[in-house]
Image (tube, rainbow, N blue to C red; front, side, top):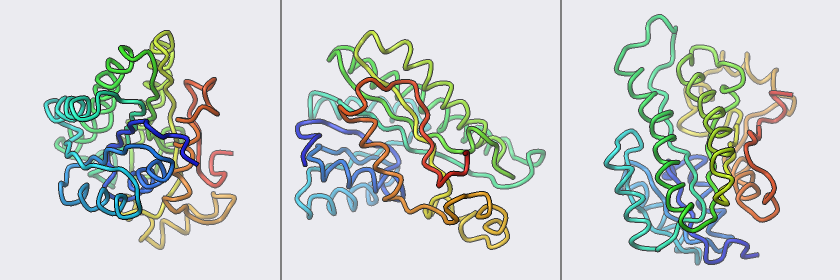
Length: 250
């Protein structure tokens, strides 16, 4: 199947984990994939792996917490490809794991800059291009923590809740321009980003009993939700937040 043939798909936070899995799966469906993260080495490695399998991919670095870097990413995308069909906000920061009262201010700033300001501004930049095209899809990676706050993850959880609200606002206001906006809420997934939880035996003992399927997810199990919500099969779906969590929020 090549349901995304001739479509340009931009994914932030795509050098590893869920973002990397998303990039591979869109490329397998024929998309021209733009792999983005802060690391040039990281994005080049993923893009090279995609091309080695016959897919189309380029790597463009972007610091999602920096305004100029976000603007450069969209500008390079439009210069190289002339269109942007799917924007996936997946980059995230969670620099602090501990009691809410002890979180340092630099960690507060970083979480807000990347997870809230970054998603909002990137959605604006992408949406402006999509408005001119009269079509497009924006997908935001939130989290189950956006619905139920994670222990010792206070501001990260709050930022993921903000993404859910942001998704709904953008969906309402961008619908007249042919732009659909949805969010995906991954549950606990086996990634380096989540290693503070997945590598902590005591935390796993707390979390796993709450997951009806009884295990953590692999990135390749989260990625198909993005393909579905970006596809024509979801053309009447906008403003939703789809949990992919093994039943945690059920």
